Length: 98
Length: 395
Image 1 (cartoon, chains in turn red, purple):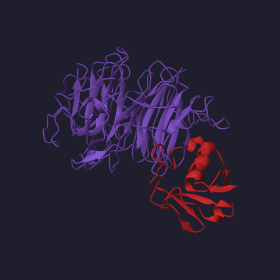
Image 2 (cartoon, each protein chain N blue to C red):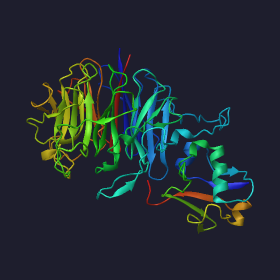
Image 3 (cartoon, helix red, strand yellow):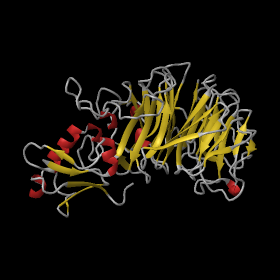
Image 4 (cartoon, one colour):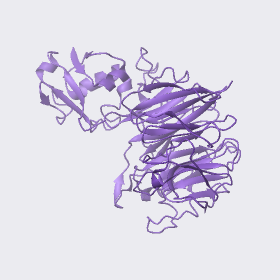
């Protein structure tokens, strides 16, 4: 299972309390994880990436394993520790947002 | 006894203020959607329990919220918690957040750019919903005025949104430019006598009218004069801040412009200035008394960079003559050291007798008057900056 940590506002929208656990088919990438996240929590569509272009919203960042993955291609594999569930993918609101 | 429900949108959440018809004792609930900007909340005239709210964030974008029980509970239309994430035919839910400009060749003429601040072309980018205007007759139909300026409509209770693309496509969209607050469509007025007639206003493009329910539009800015555009009398480019209408006289409109308070008596065909003896004719909101169609209210602001009341005195001005002759309403409002602003959607009236008038400030106060403005009292003093105020008069 893939673990995703959402920022507080998105946890509220999705009606979840803590970490989200997702089953992801195939390669574990930003895109496949976000596809699975939005399929399970459709109220999050448009809040992390644009509805149409699928580009990450400017004030949202992706961190994992103490790395900033925000600018990685969406189809690049996420770190092995994320794919195995050892580490979560962190969806973070940029400090300049809000 | 009748009641009132005041819906307040702020920079960090929404608040609902309720009182009986005396309007002396208030209950305050909130913050709802804490931490988010609530640009606007409004109830359906056809079903007062149906409320719509525009919840927005620099981080996470646009969310539409809906309540079917007068604000006790809220949900994103189409995605109530615990229900399947697709409809029976497999269509994904979560479309209530989705505002996509119409680029089809079938409706309107797709546009790719408007003017940027410096006059260069700039692509249309959806940012947020500024104003929600529920239909006068159908609780499931609601209009949304958005930034970058466009008009959207939902006919399924906010689940999905479609652009009325004839507005951007009527011909002048390429020349629209942002005001200081952005290129926003902030005013939507539904004409109760002519169901197909809608007025909208855009900062800084001007006012527009449709007579065929949004298919075709034309600018209605004759008589407006704006010194900050190359041709002060141009057909478009005017920074309209707000327009108000009394439902009994829908051809008479009152406008607070970037400078100038204006009036039309012929549904926007021509405008004339009614600033009269106001201390300054800059300001944002304008509204009409619920029972006196010629009684109007504005809050003069010093000028276009000093967004606070002149002399540090918070004064609502009332005209009982449809403009030109104004009186200052000061009782109960701070008359020294007051440097707040009142934004364009932050004034509203109730339908009780006598008429109640309400406005919110960027300092977080919401003031109310239960006697048409003669005296005022703060309902709340310390909210986040107030973006919008709407009032529902309940049985």
